[in-house]
Each structure stands twice: as structure tokens, then as C-alpha cells.
Image 1 (cartoon, rainbow, N blue to C red):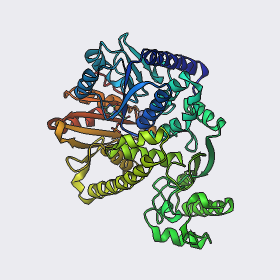
Image 2 (image 1 turned 180 degrees about the vertical axis):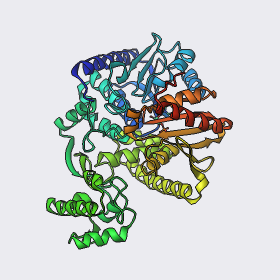
Image 3 (image 1 turned 30 degrees about the vertical axis):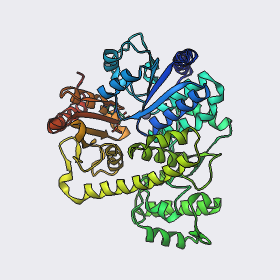
Image 4 (image 1 turned 90 degrees about the horizontal axis):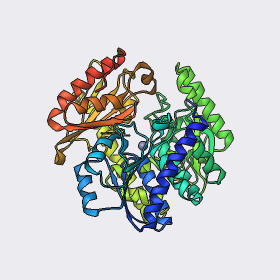
Length: 483
Ligand code: C5P
Ligand code: ZN
């Protein structure tokens, strides 16, 4: 779906209104309290806002959080900020904010589906208001970027961070993994400033940091049977093509291949996939690669997709301030510590994936959905990543997946739901399902049509799963499920 210039103009106007509210608060020397979402997009957004406020010499505080709840309200009440900024979250909580924070001047910079109608103390910037698809055409970091740019053009140097946020939210849904819609404008800003290069290339993850055979072995998109998951076979495959895996002592990464070597590798992989009858996967070998020109080669922040995973790791492993600092420009201690966190995160993910696969009762197939019973084993901050990874390789890819984990200290179950893009054409809207099902059980749910979440009291999880199973069935039959 292309975005038209009128929509972008209206959206930009609302970003300018939010910008004016922020500048006004800074002029009054008021405290600005920023709450941003815990994932890669939310952390990118927090970094953009943080840098923009630092440049204004503003008084501010940033907190990265998984959700807005009574704890958030008590923190706000004790700090008494002159302005609250909710970033990459907020639009799903408008009734709550109206109810509990009515006396605070508030800016919401979000791209999630809107639930409720804001009162006059709130300035909301959200692409959905202007008919722009927030699930794929602009991310939370993109919304923050528009506001930062409206405040001062100097913030155009933050455009690459907004690109990282959009890729973190998997918005590269246009042909050959291209960012489109409003994101295209942000990419243009970044490339015009010489900060970003976009090229079509082999799309495998890890192009800057992983030895080539590991990049091939770890790929799930495209999935290459006989090579995915098999490092030895990947090495042998490279050898058969005369591609050297090392340069002296150093393993070569995909970035180090010459154009001729890349062509050789690509056509050999294409032949191989064809021979296995996997025509569709051949089209997935090449995609748009986003490279941050000013970052050091061979580091995880040179490739925008690897950068997003690094940020996600800091958030999910309870170290989001490291990710925010990196987005604000720290290339010293915060980056070094983030790299360590990334290793821990990878270990945690593989531990959880192994755990799910170990026993059949940990992942079940119901009539309309798959369910992963993460309970107290999977960390509630990581269950979303597990849901995303496993949803890409389901026996029946048309069935949505929900995974949950308990948040013992809050007495809640945290649920993460995922489905394929094409299911939205068949009537599936997971944000709506999460909202309606959680709403029936004193919980809270929302998000995007293909990726949504909820939290419900722990004792209600069984009923919640049943309700979700039924609601998905209704959506597939074209029935309305609205509350
Ligand atoms: O937590 P998870 O990654 O599964 O969330 C998927 C999406 O749904 C995220 O964009 C998240 O912000 C959103 N969400 C929401 N309301 C909730 C839980 C998740 O809008 N209660
Ligand atoms: Zn987001």
C-alpha cells in the first residue's frame, strides 16, 4: 500500500504540534519524563528522543518499559514532570492515561493501533490517524524521528537510528525486504546525508560479524535444507565453490566477498534450492541491505538489522539503557557492554528454543492456533522473540502462534501472538483478538495485526487461550469480534 503525500503532510503537521509542545516545555525549563517501549524499535525511539532533548539542553529522564500500568503512574506522580512523553507505546492505553494522568501534559508518539479517544491534555502522533499503516509504513522510532526533525534539522543525522527501529519491528515488508511507505522518506534522509547505503545483496543475517559458513548455517529465512543448521556442510559447500572461508587467520564475513564471489555463491545456492524444488526460497536469497556508513566494519552496528538485534538484546536482558546510549552515539563503554549482552541474549534464546522442542506438551496445536506454554521457564521479556522465531517455522504456517510466560512478581501471564502477513487478508487481526480476549479477563491487550501481545492474571491463562482459539475461528469465518 503506497502512502500518499497528503497523508504524510497531515502526519507531519501532527509531528510539528508535538514538537511545539516539547519545545515549549523546554523553554519553561520543565522536566520531561519519557517512557519508551522495551523492544529494538522502542529503544531506537528513546535514543532519538534522548539525543534530540540533549541537544535542546532539556531536563529529561528516560525509562524503557514493557507496558504502562499503575507502577508507571506512581513513578509519574512522584516525579511530577511538566511533560510526559510515551514513545512506541501509549496509543493502546488512552483510556488508562485519560483516567489516571488527566492533569499531566502528555505527548504520545506511537504507531500501534489506537484504542480510545484522547482528552485535550494529550497530543497524539500516530500514523493510523492519517490512514497510514503503522504496522509496516512507519515505526515508533520513525514517529520520534519526524518529531525530532520538526524540532531541528540537525536531527536528520538520527535517520539511520529510525531505520534500525523500523527493521527491528520487521517493517521491511515491501518487495525484496524493502522499507516502504513513510519509512522510505526516512531512508532518503539518511542516504542523502551520506549516512546510509541501501543495496540489493545476499540477505543472510550476520553479514558484518559472522563467518560466512555460520551465516549460511544459521539462516532460517531463506531456509536451506541440508545447509541451515549444518556448519560443516556449509563449509564444504563454500569449498566446492572455491570460496575461501578465511583470510589468513581471520574468518571472512559475507561483507568480505568480492562481487564475483557473491555471484558464484548466489547462483550455486539458487541451483541448489531449485534442485530441491524450493523455487520460492530462491526469491528470498536477495534483498535490500541497509548499511550504516559511519560505523566500523565487522561490528554489529554497521548492518542495520544486526544493530536492531543488539538493541533488542539490551532491552530483553534488562539493560535497555545500554541500547539507548548506543543510539545516542556512545561508541565506547556502552557499545562494548551491549556486545556482551548480545552474546548472553543469544545463549538465552537457544536455551529456550531447545526447551520448547524437548517435550511435545510445551507446544500444542489447537483447532485454530498453536500455543507455547513457557510458564515460569521462559523469561517474560524474551517470550516475544521466541514467538517470532517459532512462528516462522510452523507445520501449518497459517495458524497463528501464541506463546506465554509468567511474570510471577506481578501475578500476570505475558502473551505474545504472531502470524503471517498474508493472514490479514483472511480476516486475522491479532491486536483485536488480544484486546478482546484480555478485556474479558481483567487483562490488557493490543499491538499490530500480525504481532500483538497481552497480559492477563496468571490464573486466567487457560481461559484466555480458549477464548483466543475461538476468536481466531470467528475472524476466519469473517465474523466481527469487536468488544
Ligand atoms: O510483547 P510482544 O513483542 O509480543 O508485543 C507485540 C506487539 O504488541 C508490540 O508491538 C507491543 O507493543 C504490542 N502490545 C500491545 N499491548 C499489549 C501487549 C503488546 O500493544 N498489552
Ligand atoms: Zn514499534
